[in-house]
Image (cartoon, rainbow, N blue to C red):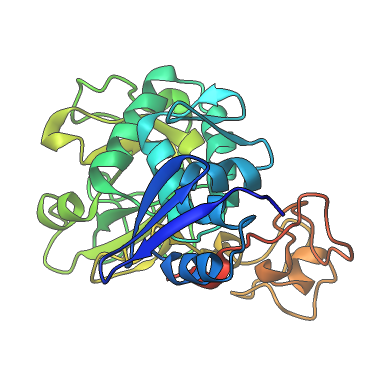
Length: 309
């Protein structure tokens, strides 16, 4: 255990901790406040640095994927745009696991457009879209009452469907505000600007950052053009209670590539493939395999998940 001395003061509003010559002020409303109080009272000096500093938590439990340098966050050696860095800090402060952001960064690096990547961050920053556990994000779309798209009436947006078109047929010019492509938006734009008839349905969709093509400049960057999304469900309100969303698109789509079963949840007796025999919760988040029998090298549990709000 470290011999570094710790001085501290606890008030109704804040916890002030002086550690290794630096003073940290943590709000009593912080997700980790109670744990910090317990650590300073018990003189658990090894745990205090991680409880007072998001940067320390990020570096220690990021397994080298996240590095903090002069307040900037690098993801796998690449400087993260501000909104992604802010989300990493936010997840760390709220005790949320960091793996979804690693997956998000990996997905984003598959996007071939530099411009689309940077436009996407502006879109997420303005609208604070939830990140999903598989490294995608949530957006919204309004369609006709029969689930067909508003403009052509030819694309079926029924729940569970994967809607896609060739990327090279989506207009990548953000100055062209209304053009070819699949459109998704934030809640306000989808609810108040889209007009799809009196029986229109509002959909929640999941988008992979690799499939973002352009964020048009109109309407304060509230919508975007993509080449693919998954329809998660029909909604009547914005679902933004948490910055991290657990989704199960494999189950939503139904069936699998290894069998011909038509069941909605792919949990039937007609197939013995892994995807049908195991729920998505059985998939190891570190090796991405089902029914992992051993603890993976990166399988250390995030030590602050007990503080999850």
